[in-house]
Each structure stands twice: as C-alpha cells, then as structure tokens.
Image (tube, rainbow, N blue to C red; front, side, top):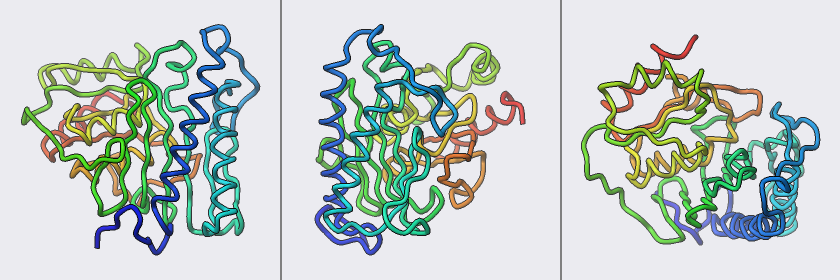
Length: 288
C-alpha cells in the first residue's frame, strides 16, 4: 500500500515529520551559506571526517544543523535510530542496535559549495534496515535550483512538495550524468561511452544526478569511481520511485550496505537497456 505524507509508516512513523525536519535543515544550511560567502571563506578545514575526507568548517556546521534537527525529532517521539553521517560516522539516538537508520550527507558536492558553484545538495535517507533496499524515505535539496526532491516508498516522487510524473522525450541515452569527474578517472569511462551516449553532464553531486534521473532530465547516470552510502541513499530511492533502475556494483540493492565503510560503483537509468550499457561501461573502464 502506498504511504503518503501524513499517513503512518510502520517503520518511520509520519513521513511528514521527517520531511519537515529536512526542510528545517535546508533553512539552517541556507543561512550558513549566506553567512560564509566567498571561496576563501569556505576553504577552511578542520581535520579528517569519519568518511575519510578532509572536513570543511562549513561541512561540520551544516552537519551540526542536521543533527540538531535529529535531536528535535527524538524529542518529538521518533523511534530509536542510528544516524550515519559523513563527518561524525555512526551516532545512536537511543538504542545503538536500532534497525532504523538515518543516512545524511549535509553537503553532497562539497567542492562545488567551497568554490561557490551552486550545484550542491543536502541528502537525507531514512531506512528500516541496513541496506539500500531498506530505504523508506529520501530527501534531496538542490541549493542551486532551490528544488526539493522527495520520495516515500510506494508513494512516488515529489518536487517542492508537488507530485511529479516522469517526462521522457527521448528513448535512449541522450543525456547522461558522469560523477567523480577527475580527468584520470573519467578518461577511460568517456572513451567507453563514445558512440553510446549523445551528451554528458557532470553536476558534481551524486544526489542531484539521481534526482535528475527520477525527473527525466537525465536518461542515466554513473560514477567513474566508487561512492559511499551517504552520497546515494536518498537519491536512489527517489530514482526508483520514478520507475528508474539503480545498480550498486552490478549487485542487488539488498547487498549494498548503508554503513560508512561501504564503497561501490553506482549506475542508474530509466530503462533496462540503458542501465546495461552503463554497467558494461563500468566493467570495461573501471579497474576491478
């Protein structure tokens, strides 16, 4: 049965409470981006996060905003959950063995945010278990376009709160997003895509690319190197709720864990033929 905002889900409760928390996270982060404006101001680091990358001060501040909203949810009676975040790692809100997981990337596209490129996003996923297959709710806010993409399992996709239907003007791989775009990594992937894809785009945010697949703006997307759960957990549900197909390392979603240590190549497309082409490219061009 489809779960709509306002209904009760047996795992996460009222989806709207989670979505409201996500929207408050967006408001808090937006204030930080207004305050910390300019490339120099945003290029301030403070150590290494649990995900293994250097932590920008704005990353940490945006994560603080997200965790404050998670604390608020617990105060409102949300069930016990474990948060999985790029900077803090795993943080228990109640029972550390709780099956409910909340996977957060406060800034997906940190390089874009640091360089004042507007395409970066907040990504939040709520899952009833340990894998990508268990994600029940996904939320991605694109700060460049100021669009909020959301999905609750079985209830389709919404953009800025309004239901949307997939629009697809082209049947093949006309426009495909390529993520993890350093030249050495993408060169063999681009070569393998020659003759199979008409145009490539590199937004710099995996979550945004998946949301754009969900809305038919991209016919597919793929990563040129491995990604983490925080990058993709929310967006992959949004893409699947639009009838898109998603693959992690060419394996079942149930075998793609949400923990921060997991790494996998990611591909998504709007039909099986397109996905098979992208998976073949990954197998051909990315070292095993």
